[in-house]
Length: 320
Image (cartoon, rainbow, N blue to C red; front, side, top):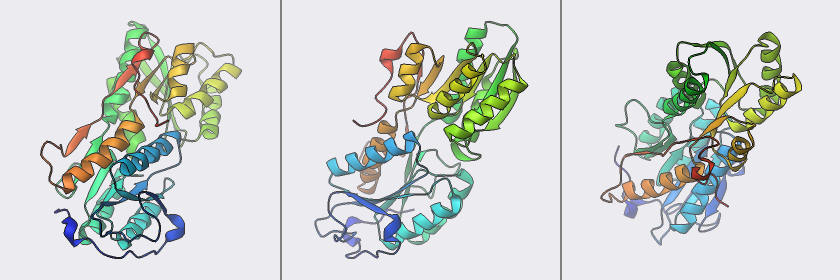
């Protein structure tokens, strides 16, 4: 896919679906999508409303503003159909490129094809497709490695003892499947997964799942929870059931998550900074559009396994 040359940007923008979209960064809603000053116009299609997604949006907006770009944003609310609709709205605005935090990797093929037909390049956040030929680039979090790092902590902590592990996954598809797959694949043979249920990235749902899990498996030793917001709810459920010795490992590295590791409420978490993902996505999208030298098509976001021993090394998660 060839990115559009800046001089050919559209001079006007269609405002179809404006109620679902927010304009941020430089300019105002009355500005054209291909402004005469040559600034880049980006569409950002976010996947949900979790703390991760909120921080990711904030980072995209702040980086775009600092770099003189305009951003239209939309939220797909974990629905693949809404994601495609949001992408169609962005296409109608003649954005120069789309940044997509996808709801489901299986939905990406149709999303990318729609954008390719409109000659609008797509930059992905968090995941990459198996075939990147039609994608401008990606800021990739190795989600399988994230899960594997948590599994590695359990292996070390269990020290060869037979242990029971529960999994509170996210929503089926995209991030959760990769996280859980990486976690399960890296567990040692002495660790048995006795329960695996989706918490849908919803703390209330995760708490219900945890309550049922600990009733069914009172001998649970460890739990892997697919994000920290759910992990706090799982901790609450376990503690209420008298299972405060179940060690929880999680994902994200938010300020609250790192504090929970420090206090012992969480045993470990894997930090993958939403701020760094958003910053990388915007800057690399602009760089790739401009054919800048030294900009990688695939940028790997650094990962840090955070335990009590290295909480000070956790990267900043969210823009202030």
